[in-house]
Image 1: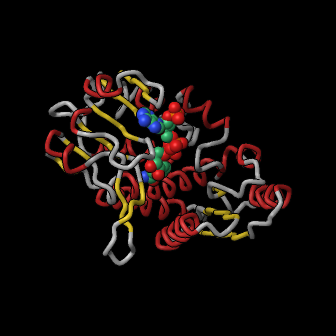
Image 2: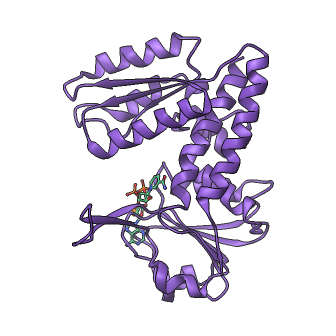
Image 3: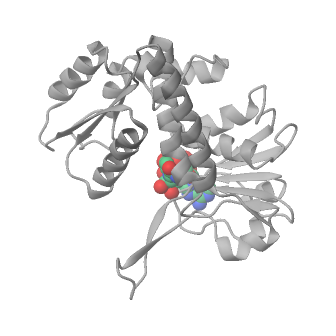
Length: 291
Ligand code: NDP
């Protein structure tokens, strides 16, 4: 069984990013990322902090804006428009989820698609479907594809089952896998909560990509001998007696599934570190394209 280390592969991606940053610097360009956080959700705060730190470690220009939970939609839109107009900023993201009074779809549509490094703007969703290489692909599925390529997993002609159909993970993942090209060309099935006989569907998979949001949902019975499993899930579960009182587990019951697999990603240390590395990579791409 091969354990696919996202930590290791992410550091290779970040090394590539460093080379590209040096090339851009030689042309007088420095990629800039603006991250906007509204409210004080602790998990969102932690994500924003780590994105800001990763940018600074790499030598990117990073702007972090923390707005109170009472910020109105118009105030947030005004902030987005300021970054759209700022030539030092190439990537903009608004940390999800915003407070309930803010319509996330409106905010996403206000971001300049050329700066939409999360890849959630309808223009970028369309570009993914059209296989237009100038588009931005959401960081998590892009990271999963990169993991498969780096781990030497053949996707060409493979049966890939994506469990989950969200716009952040499942749907773009399926589009990436069915596209033409390297790390793609797969025969894709998308499963969700209404799928009949999920076990049977998963058992036909050469590669299972689990993005469900339910701790340890995929069991040994879902996985055929020799399959590859990519676990996107990040779930907090109680762990009494530990310092934090909780631990992180994936959407896959690792201990029972791993022995059946040809390759599998761990949680933590699998897809998680790839997501932030691909965000850096998308920001550099935005800078290159905007010039
Ligand atoms: P969503 O809740 O948006 O989507 C979950 C999907 O799983 C839905 O399509 C849902 O189906 C499906 N689902 C739920 N229950 C079942 C079931 N019993 N059987 C089959 N399918 C089911 O979650 P996200 O896509 O945003 O996230 C998925 C997971 O990935 C979460 O654990 C999240 O924390 C993690 N994540 C990790 C990231 C990383 O960086 N590693 C980044 C983003 C997410 P339906 O559509 O029918 O409701």
